[in-house]
Length: 260
Image 1 (cartoon, rainbow, N blue to C red):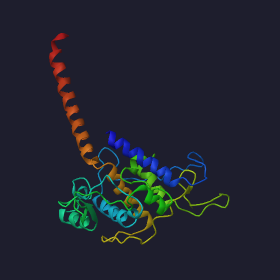
Image 2 (image 1 turned 60 degrees about the vertical axis):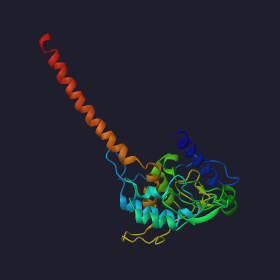
Image 3 (image 1 turned 90 degrees about the vertical axis):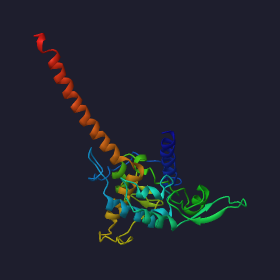
Image 4 (image 1 turned 90 degrees about the horizontal axis):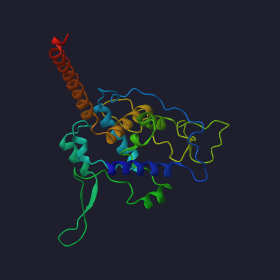
């Protein structure tokens, strides 16, 4: 639990560092707009993940988001686990083999490179935070736990991705981009998505809204990979408690039946 809490804190701190603009005051509560309220399949007591949306979301992350953002707490083998995208083992091996991993030392005491394996974590686009800051001007936050690190969760992440607009005439946009849903409305990250940017093999329309929804769905899973298991367990506990309550009620009536 300490590791997860620390990861959330680091992601939140990194996000602030990446999105707050140099010289611009923090305006988290100024002109704040409520995020779009979407109906997600994973919401509610019986919520589940949409497997097709998860697979499309992984594709959006891989082809767009991973250029700047890491997901260091996700390993390729997780993509095959129940409750997630549920890629086959063969697909996971193929996806992992597309990356190169530095490993070692070998018997000669030297580091070496090898193709990625399912046990490996998603690669970071930069070797260290300093390299990321030099390339981007700031450190892009890790996305593994992002939907849990932001008030509004999945709704906020989706809204942010579709919230890029032309700045109003009365808004002083000094640098960066205007985003309707970002606190203060000035965001350092340029608009990441555009229509047709990612090809969907299943024929789903590849609009900005659809890609934003799919990658947010995927990011929700990376932050809550055991969500379906928890929902099932919670439902089983409720059934058990109802049954136990019924048994205790009738037992009490039986015991006290002759008392009146």
